Image (cartoon, rainbow, N blue to C red; front, side):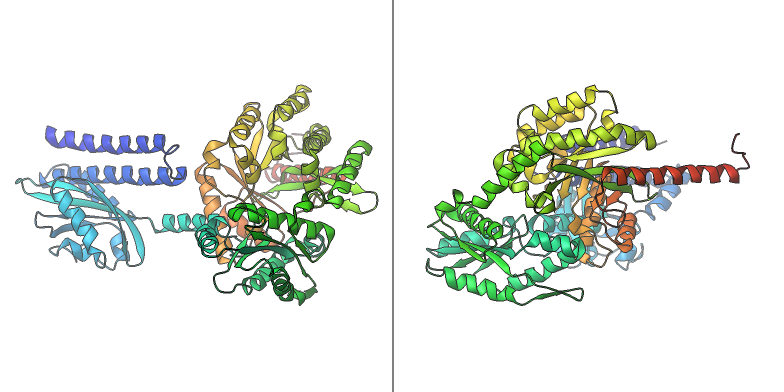
Length: 626
């Protein structure tokens, strides 16, 4: 039997570990640390406390020569753990070592016995030695060390010997993979995944220094002209390649202390010290970089730049206001199809093309020119169609079929987003009930914009639709982008929770292109993460692959479903499937199609399911009627 004091110490240490984990779980929501990282850290600490308690109990029992079989089992278990455990005497000389992690450090359990404890931490001895001395004095100390290129998280505690002599017991867990995942997510917040260029948040310090050092700063916002038309013509994969090539050319424009960033809609922004008379020279500098054609997978693509230019302090106070002015100038250049536009206050009132587009869009709503297409969402494992995303299109009488990038800005500016959103909801759900007779588990996903979250309009609209009783609320999902959430976090959270309470699914759309903050995963009732198409790859892009792997792993740990957008090739599908994504959508399976074509896809799915069931019955020796 173990004496009462030893048993009490064992139970106390276990209790301490459990309480530590509970406190960490409770506080992860309000501490300024991402919740998954906080939970993982507290779990690691709690697990280490439990391991220490088990080892102290095991060594005490073995020292008394009792419960030998349990001690042997514990020793065998410790040899398999991805950790290392050690004890020292009062002189901090190592008395024993255990754990599979020792092999990674090229040690066997007996190699270190009798040596000073700092031998174990070669290269980072000061912190570790101080921690052991504190533990010898009765403290519990946690620290992190880098050993042989790997990162370890360790805890040391006092260890009382039978003769009253003190010692130290420590546990170190290999957390290298976790640190790499955290670094990948940090990079995602500060760098654009496709081009590698910094976002404005990643360049704030340099921008502040530039604005402080120079009395006048020129800001040029630019991108390839006719970007939407080029993307539709060459496809998403090749357009992504064009974007990376354009970014490489943009990077050559930097001179001196210039700062180059990429904006949220993947336009490039160059900040440079300049006088207010430098507009022409700056525009020519950018235009020359983009005048030569690009070669994309053997195809020649002519993509000159559209440029908008503004100056601080003439056109705005500080970084953000001046960037906004340059962005307005760029938008005018893009819409008007002119190479260069310098910002003037008159641009706000002179957007004639936008006004005309807004007028045409109102007519389109009234005359039924809008339509909805459906892109299948497919199970990565079975290949079955799980659902569809409803996507609005505009059948323009003169310009043909228009995709959202061609008119969404005009819809926002004219306040038509709520009306268009309701049209899509009613049109899409009108097909859902009949489709679910073919595929009972089918869901339909509808995009929701920031303007739709204002007031009660969207909730009331969905309530009216659900009141018909034609389908279960679980069959309807809403998708919202990070930028839409950020406009009014409090209101957005309240509206989404009301929708969630009705049984609807909530998806965070285009994850990775906006703020990519882990905070959304705790502030909003999200059950699905849709990973932006720019991360879809076949494993050949190390940077994209690291981020994709980290996001899927994070979602799985939080019980969130993942859907990877923009999967176009078999290689990309195989890679996404291997990483553990639940579903995908993209040209690999189907582009967005008309309702009749989507119904045909469902019918094909029903036939495959029926044939598969029949084959199973035949293999089991059952007759068709049995």
